[in-house]
Length: 422
Image 1: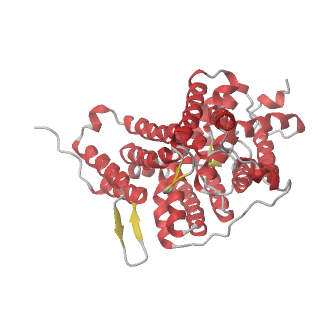
Image 2 (image 1 turned 180 degrees about the horizontal axis):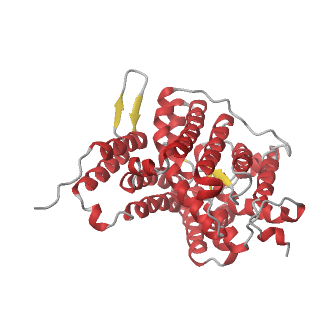
Image 3 (image 1 turned 180 degrees about the vertical axis):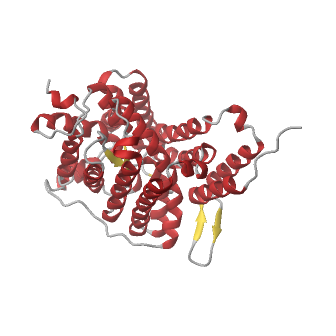
């Protein structure tokens, strides 16, 4: 075996190309899932994932073997933002969200990390993450039942069969998968769900999967980049959502450090990894792509293969950018039936909620029953899930996840600690 593969030093060569392609394959299902759910161009998502990974490597001097791609935390804000302000304004808000990471990275350089834990403790971050997952529940159920808006695009029974197969496959692979299969549950769920839709279409004599988009798509096509617009309402709606992924970034960097045996919090430093993540997200927003985040699927693949050389991720980024110009790929992705994605979404959005629960559990059951903490958690959950909206003037309304996040931060800062029992 090439010793450069197991080295944690950056050593670029053709020998890492195959492993780089494998890393992209591992990330592919989750990478394209976000644009498919939100209406963004999957080709742009591929391009910005590759570009974002290269930006991250430049900022961190090629020291961390991670791959950056579409962040699930922003799915709900993107869907709402597109419906409310349009795609260009939404991507502008996403670009500014990346700059929030940049600001945090410089604040860490100046003040350290203690302030971040005071402003954003688990009692705030956990419920906000839970709201992100729970707010998407109706979207997942509607797609799993074949309902697009008010239109039933296929018989509900057919949709539920397809959704159940894709969901069941994803569950089984996640639980029982071995080796590399263990890190491919989403991709396997999409493939099996797609095949089941083809079979069901043949059995029932109905057209569930159409191939016109694949046939008509050119082999070479420039991704559908979008010029962003910057609207204050969209920016202030999306900014609070960026706080949760910023906190998760710490866990992601610690996780890959645990795999490779390196302390990336110290070298290249959490301030630099945060900066790289932020610049990658801003670049994605400026081009019309989803925000980037470090991928746990790829970290899992690194664990299995012991492929610690960060240059492998350079190859993955190169392949992602190259594939973004293959028009047939976007054409094929557009043929995936909606219930296939709906079935997977039921699991994925539920898992986002569980991540929030895990963060919240860090404070312990005794602290959770503290009146102050219960007040903060309850307020965040109800504001976020209930969709409370507060207008500020004629052109700006703060609502949902954004309002819940701001409320949580403010309550944590201003509420007094509970008095000790007499």
